[in-house]
Amino acid sequence: MPDPMITYSETETKGHYSATFDGVDGEAYLTTSKLSAATVIADGTVVPDSMRGMGAGAALAKRLIADARAAGQRIVPLCPFVRAYADKHREELTDVIQW
Image (cartoon, rainbow, N blue to C red; front, side):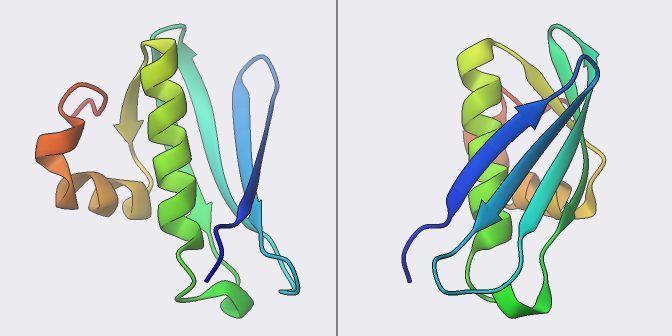
């Protein structure tokens, strides 16, 4: 399965990652809230049925983590999916996840 195309948009207080696959209907997304310049909250992840099992949620979580690392930010994983992903990769993510 090819990687999804991920785009990011933001406002002053919110962030929105969206993922699509060529030839697949729907859009998966992950929303964030900016707590401060150094901290973002992963609010929620939604993956439509048409994308289940394709790795869209993991790809969104990885992109959020990569972006936070690059910006020197910490992530508060309130979203159950991001929290489960972070817990599964806890040792690799100690620098970016704020428990």
